[in-house]
Length: 118
Length: 117
Image (tube, each protein chain N blue to C red):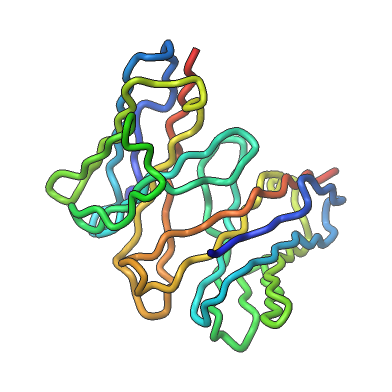
């Protein structure tokens, strides 16, 4: 069964510095997708970035990049130039192979709470 | 485009009472998901619909939880009777139907926070 592990319950970072949030996953499938979502105190889950298991290059979206190390089964999120508005919970998630069921559910980790200090 | 709409945002009930949550997905999204997020944990899938058919309800406590998606658009999640451990945020999400790349993104609503006393 697929599993996502986020070992950092909480992280602090100084404004304008970079921070890495760890995520490891466990699956026996060859085809899967990895996602990061941000959940501010308002509660809504906001999509940040996606990496497919066959993608050769690490995904980037603005200040977000995903450090994908397939052999180590890790998919760490890197946030560059942290801003006060980045303070939130961050969840790593894995999608089962899409053909298992149409759409493919996401399995989430426990989350990491990031606090950005001014 | 309009996002995923959920109501009510907050609900407080006594144990053994019933409650219902409503979700209206993004127009054109065939897949609809209900997730339960207990405080301090990541979301856990309760049920997934593809149009108006159930794709996955393996983690839905069927003795007390039920969900329907009539006409393949909006959906209702019901809990009857509620238990203390049902206190959580209930998140609805929608996405386009599955694609070979698996990259279709789930868009979430703001959630419905349930407190069972």
